[in-house]
Image (cartoon, rainbow, N blue to C red; front, side, top):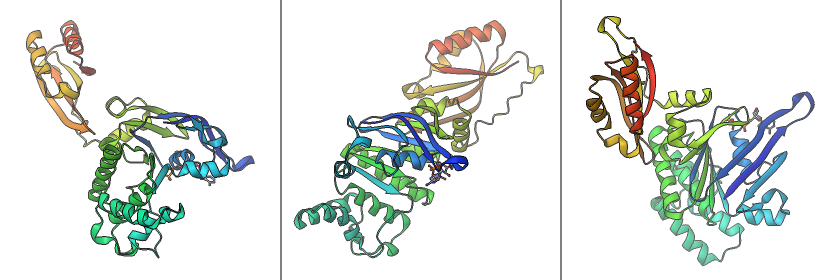
Length: 339
Ligand SMILES: Nc1ncnc2c1ncn2[C@@H]1O[C@H](COP(=O)(O)OP(=O)(O)OP(=O)(O)O)[C@@H](O)[C@H]1O
């Protein structure tokens, strides 16, 4: 659906040159929610703005539905842009217009018949839950309500793709949750592909299917949210995962030599396994006692997962055999400390 091929972007020239994006290759599938996460200055805004060419790459191709939009003449690009909606951190509403007229604005620009515009605006106001606010002006709305207007306006021309530029960064946690729930509902109901940028792992874990981690203008890690979140490889990804965790990872991992041979492991369960007694049954079969030191059971979008820090009352060959048995059950097992 969207394919970025070897995208590079530099700003400035000579000694002041900044390479904002380096050799970016990225594919976004139809109807998925794709998240791009990175620290400030990583290149997120530049990257999302290349998808609708608000920012032209210095080199590389932006393929949308098989067409390289960097090579389209201006009028064809304008047409294409109508199929890509965008929402912004600071909403970018027209302060002199009512909620109704802000949403109608793109329809009037594209010269829709008046009756059709009215029908569509009413439908969109219903979709984003602003029925009681149609005649208000942006200054009379809360941040969350303003973003709902932004979303309705972005959807007015029936785009296939919605780009979200830090759409929840200016909102409090509760309002963030309600806007994320609305984006998820829109994705599911209308099958719109959503690409979002954020510096918050919580946003990624709440609604994204796949994620790319951006650092210094490069993609340093990407994949399904569950794999990236539960098995982070790159230092930057690890930082984001730590930011989103509740601190339960910080187990007290010292083994008391007096207590004999012990092995501490981190076991990760994903999906259906989370609710099955795999751990108990394997340990019973191996006849190895164990203690659970720390545990988390949570969800990544629709995927349940569990992570346990477990101390096996075994070491050496006996521990190795037990770890193999656990891995044979499909569990991810990482050895933390061997006694
Ligand atoms: N118009 C510009 N002119 C010169 N340099 C720019 C311009 N826009 C961005 N940059 C530089 O490009 C790099 C990437 O910036 P970008 O805004 O894409 O990052 P970001 O990850 O979105 O950061 P933030 O979260 O702070 O917005 C930064 O070093 C920034 O200073």
